[in-house]
Image 1 (spheres, rainbow, N blue to C red):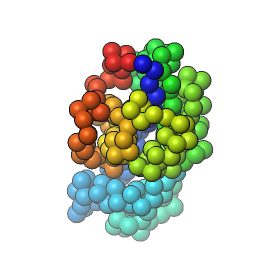
Image 2 (image 1 turned 135 degrees about the vertical axis):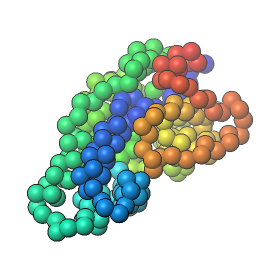
Image 3 (image 1 turned 45 degrees about the horizontal axis):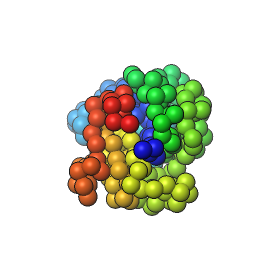
Image 4 (image 1 turned 180 degrees about the vertical axis):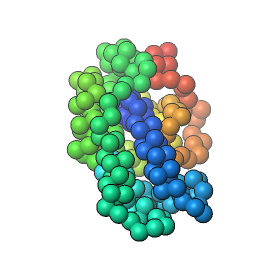
Length: 225
C-alpha cells in the first residue's frame, strides 16, 4: 500500500549537529573557566540556546551571550570576534548526506509520497535543502518553526493525509517521534549519535506496537517500505 512518509532533514538526511558540537567544544576550551567544569558551562549554554531558538544564527548569539555571562576577565573585541566566528563557521561546512540516504530516497520515491519536513529558520533551512541536491525527490518540502502536535495536525489537514498510512521519520524524540505519535501518526525513529541535547526525550508508549518502528540506519527503510 502506498504510504505518506514525512522525513526529517537535519541529522536524518544529512549531518548537522556534529558541526555544532565541535564549535561548542572549541568554545568551552577557549572560555577555559577556572571554576566551572565543561559540563557546567555546557548547561549554561544549553539554557541560553533554549531561549534563543534554533539555527546557526541563534547559536552564534547563544555563544556570545554565554561568553559575556561567564568570562572571568575583561572581554575584548578580539575575543568576541573569535566566539562569533565559532558560530558563523557553521554556515561554511559542506552539506553531507548520511550513508545510504540518496539510494534509499530514490528507492522509496516511486512507491510512496515523500514529504521533507524540517524546522528552523526559513532561509537557513531552505538553503540547506537547495544545497542537498535531493529536493526534487520529494512531493512537498515544508519548513516549520516548530514540530509539535499542532504542527502535525495542520500538515495532515493541509496535505489531506490519512493518519493510519502516514509515518514521521526522524532522529529526534522531542520533535519527530513523540508529537507525531500524539497526533495519531505512525513514527520511525532513526537514532543519530550526535542528536542535539535539547531534542532528547523519552519516547512515549505508542497506542499500538505497530505504530512505532526503530531502525539503525535510514537505509533500513528499504526493508519495510
